[in-house]
Amino acid sequence: MITQRGRPKAVLMEYESYNQMIKRQEALKDARDTLIIKRAITSSTGFVTFDELLKDYERATGTRVSLDELAELAKGV
Image (cartoon, rainbow, N blue to C red; front, side, top):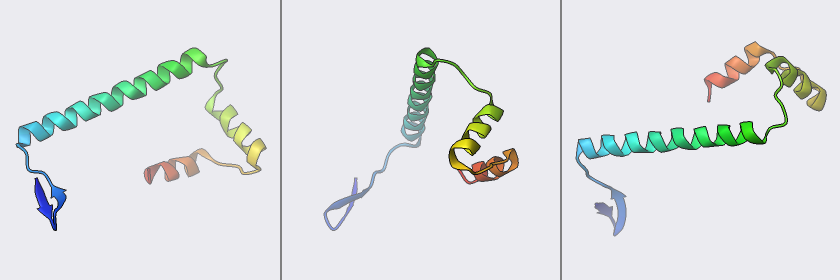
């Protein structure tokens, strides 16, 4: 561990250990996402199409959103 003024600032580790840590972290995120999706499916009362979702959003907010606008917004995420 590298410190600056007595506070931890960086950690040195082997490259392979770092790669394994990143792969483990990605696998945990994938497992979490899978669990969230499975829970949503089992607890849902039904599904709507994407067009229905956009119409519901428009009714609720008074704002019409196009697919092109959503695609443009998604680029920044």
